[in-house]
Image (cartoon, rainbow, N blue to C red; front, side, top):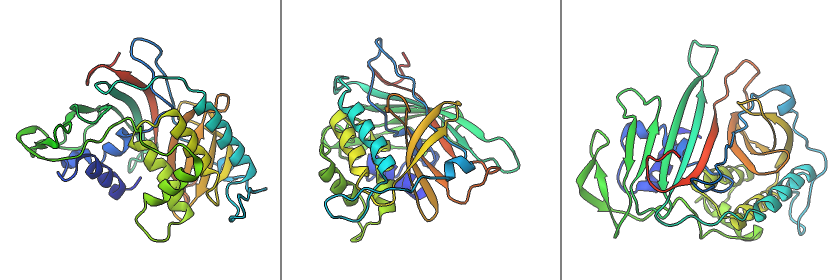
Length: 316
């Protein structure tokens, strides 16, 4: 995700207030998608992003047979479509109940990023507690705040059409601003593939939306919040209709775990949507520079833990 996309996500969350500058490099990794929340005190999911280094095996994307849907231009390859349909079936089988409006989505992630002059990537751990219905104050915590930034930042909830304003140091002021709640649980999304594809294209305001833009919007939507099971299934099946989507059958995540992915190589970046190779549960979304070589540090993120908790700041 580039800097503009990160800032746009923050503005969408807290419009029209301008966020503190130290948040701009963090919120993109905070609003991450997941395969479905577990309940605090019950089962906790441990998830991992497939932050694959761009090795020869990953770059050897399979582009053999393609699927033509309803006479439209060839869409995803047959192998990619199979992966996505299995992921959709796994999503539909998810019986996790919807979270309560007063709960929070806790996401713990670890980001890997290039460091000039160093062989090894730098790392930063981020925890976010985002309000399920968007009306309660959330929280972002990071282990490695930017220079002059804060380790803890409150995300004001939107209540009665008003939210607290941020001060210059990231603190909340007594003054308020107009707002629209930004729920972390996205309950109003399409539940069938055709409508979801239309929704993905509509996320880009351009008249003509490319396949690369449409598939990139899959990642934007995943980062925006939790999708209910039926909407996740529709998202994966919508991706089968995007021309140029191919299979990356074997990738390795930053924790050394194997995953399987569908990808779209763009003009600058390659976009990967990655699943557990056995269960086809969602593992991660990643963007890898097309020009990356084996020795180059690829920026990626690992989602360590996703769960539903009762209050912001709660970790178990």
